[in-house]
Picture 1 (cartoon, rainbow, N blue to C red):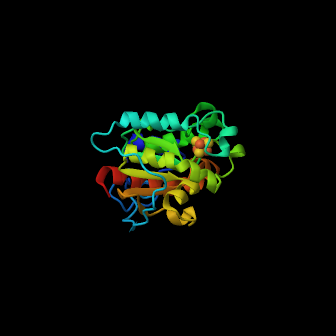
Picture 2: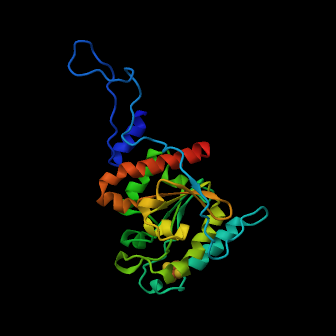
Picture 3: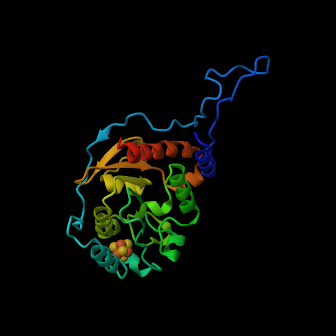
Length: 259
Ligand code: SF4
């Protein structure tokens, strides 16, 4: 593992143990079984072993906008933004400061999907800001991605009061916007962060602990979908960071090698 990746792992709070560089005959301790000078290995093995690919592609709610040849995708994005900004489809419009549409490259290889805006996001109008957002940014950097290189959006575009879980009717009203965003970006990989995003995208109530560690397929395009823990949870439960690192390594392998 190179020094830069080690630095990023430290930044997200994962300790990467390194093999001893060499065993000096006559020195204290027991020689390492690995060859001296071998590359450092993280605690969490990168690239989880081949995960089962489950054809769980959910029926996509709402009608996705086409981004096929000849379509004016810029116009489609503008129409979508213009629809979201003043949206009153559910009661959350009455308590929001502003809608939180999404941010990032509109032709990104990776689409990160979270739950809903929190207080910081509601004020700034951008998903994943604040401490959880900083951790997400660091996690992306750890697999060689800049935040600006991916697209990030939430299941809901407006903040639920008190950061409560989204209610089913709110997700029902709002997720057609997300479905259109996914269709327009047409990512190579989707990363669902947190239980709410994962369960909606996969149309299941299976606990997140049983959803992560697998590669699902989303939608008609069969886009690989990986589930991991929400950065806000990782801030509260740092021991889970090593598990999340495994998920990120699967994302990295899918992006780099298509597997
Ligand atoms: Fe509209 Fe979504 Fe906001 Fe509800 S949460 S008002 S559906 S943008």
